[in-house]
Image 1 (cartoon, helix red, strand yellow):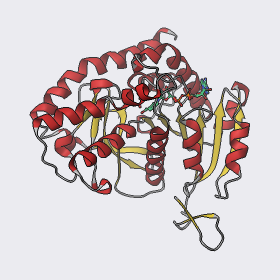
Image 2 (cartoon, helix red, strand yellow):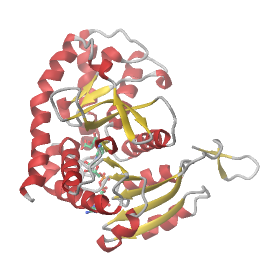
Image 3 (cartoon, helix red, strand yellow):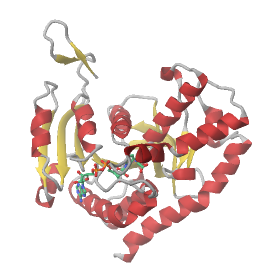
Image 4 (cartoon, protein in one colour):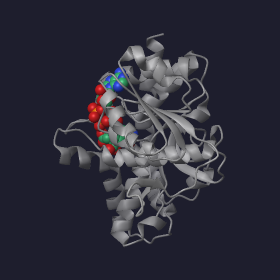
Length: 337
Ligand code: NAD
Ligand code: LMR
């Protein structure tokens, strides 16, 4: 990330230039997540080109960002007629397009609108950037990722290693809340979060947290509930003005950086994400995965071994809801065939 140089007063990169740089497209770039996420991407030394797309006008946002003196080129594409040019040549496509929650809504209440948005956008990705990694942020992630998978299958370009539901915000929250509770140095804390991205389908594995941390049963229950309700905490605080945007942009930028490091050949890059999975009987499941040159290289089955009794019960309890959300997404695409 950038630092301010005392000599020039301008923003320069601390890291040396990388061997490879990548082309990234953000679909829904004009929104609450899209704008700060695009700023963070503009600062990445791993990105050479950033294409912004929205149904709303994003030319001003692209012009604004393009004045930051970091090397990445920025271009704006507005309206469906410009989507093809936006996607052409993309290595990674990030999708935060769609409506956010208001107080009292569940993520599943967004399905009616966001399912169609994600389906249409992924159809275009399948046609125009069929080998790109796809990072889905739009809710309900538990259903929008199966929707994307089904669309890609129908188009004959599905590579399960390249499709991700972005659940990094759950990990970011788990790390923050655990560090606060136990007075840990945040930089040391890492909590894997498995399952899905809605309510009790979000399952932080506090027994697997690093550094190993002793928690009472009450502390585990309290922290788990806070992590599961992190999104609702923000929705209520924003009181009708949307859901998490800045922390989500931070989380999505972290996930992009890890994905690009994997594409670039870095070893030992791990992130939690909601992906096609064989770890449980559910076809899609969030867990820690190793990221490599082609996307997901492997899941980490050890994370699901030796769970606490609380986690075992929570894992079994989340499965029916997650299965229903997956089936709803798959049925949505199949019925429109
Ligand atoms: P927002 O309303 O501020 O922005 C959404 C943007 O999408 C808008 O600019 C809108 O014009 C654009 N858009 C709508 N339809 C589009 C289409 N067909 N093509 C291109 N762009 C389109 O919303 P936000 O706060 O940025 O949230 C976006 C989504 O991300 C929501 O569904 C929200 O629930 C979800 N979200 C997910 C996570 C997560 O952890 N995965 C976290 C926070 C928010
Ligand atoms: C979140 O976890 O913040 C997002 O999924 C947005 C929401 O609706 O809670």
